[in-house]
Image 1 (cartoon, rainbow, N blue to C red):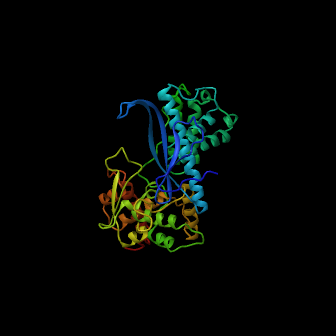
Image 2 (image 1 turned 135 degrees about the horizontal axis):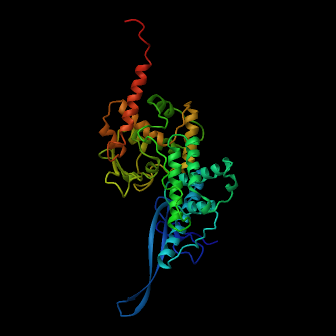
Image 3 (image 1 turned 180 degrees about the vertical axis):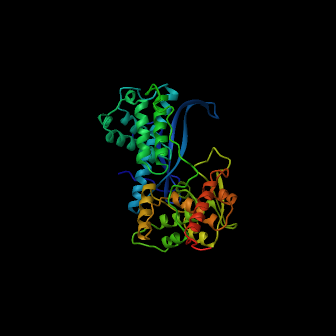
Length: 405
């Protein structure tokens, strides 16, 4: 067996097929991780050396995927993280190869309107590179459930051609989502489903968009997720259990005290912390590249600085919380909440809502809350003010009635 070079800066090519373009590879970092990249072959270029010799220079473009592997995983969680990250990188590589074929040769994989749309949907998911891939997969799962549950359509539960997806079917699918989903689930699932349908229309798989004119509207100014009170947060923090993941624990507590999303807290490095000025600076994944308000600055107190720790052992470029997959984090969070005796459906995003409501209840003004959450305006933040008003009304209504005046 060939020994792999594990010294910092060394490179290995993961792609095993010599025809792959781009090729997937990794570079060893000084913190014990491997940074994944794609090398795309761009052809030859005639060059002349200093002595006048003309030669062909191979042109390659390297793209960092900003995905990382543990070089020597020590736990089941780290091995699972490596497996899931590598699968994601392979899907990205495949999509880039298709883009390259389309750009250079004028074609992608053969288009066929006789295909099974369920398989086409799954293939779309397999090559999908954005961070909401879990929600896109959920959209396929809910569409399959709809086909199986509704008598009129269960003949399509295993196979359905694109031309068999009609506007009437989608209207029934929308009604099904409204009946069976909670909160904003129906809107979220349908938005991803429409995204895949539009992709199929754009690539001439579906001739006419069956989703056109059909929307799901919800009141975006109502908070539908469960909120943790300060008493429940204290109870959660004081709860420990055997086998708990300390990184998941610390990362969720940081989200409760800063309002950070999971996708942002998982990418935090020690370089994002200004220790001398006691500040945390980061750019929101959700709005990065298309909003002038994507940057967020959060002051840190002694408790939060202790929670974060310092970079002395791992280096400033190291992740503060090396978290496993989102699924693993949610599983651990549910177990933790249950152990704390809290009977609420708590997801990671509940930390963001809890943070906003709790600081509003403690007297923070709406502009401060909007700034801490990274909102570009006050409209999105106003839903928290409405929620606080309803909590105040509920508190007043809880007082005993006045029987005599």
